[in-house]
Length: 147
Image 1: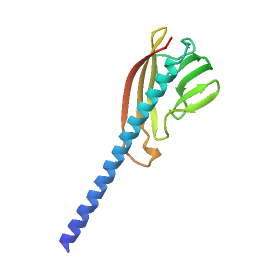
Image 2: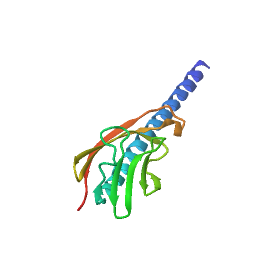
Image 3: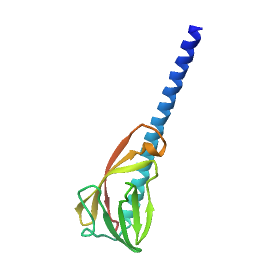
Image 4: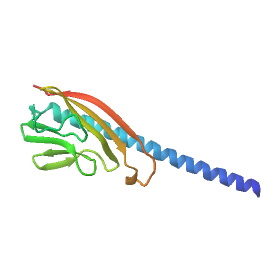
């Protein structure tokens, strides 16, 4: 009987460890996938702009804001009140991060008139999936307007 209890207890601990491992893998995957998606989207938006409105942008601090001039009008990259990254195209707002992540650092930097630097950190939002695991990843990149 004692051996059966020990085996069952071992099985319970094993199942808990597998569940926690799966939650960690999910969190890491969500953050990394969202980070890559955000970088790809921002690269496409920034490089297709005709000009950067530096005066209307908020640079060198978090949360930053970048205002671009495109053939379709103004495009603003910023965070909303829930730390989700949004693209505002003349009043039409789209979120480019998922509900399971939050942007914990968004800093734009001016390198020259046509080049902007980006420091981006994305963290897992455990409340979205009722887990207690936290994970954050950061990226640094620069984008140049295409002429």
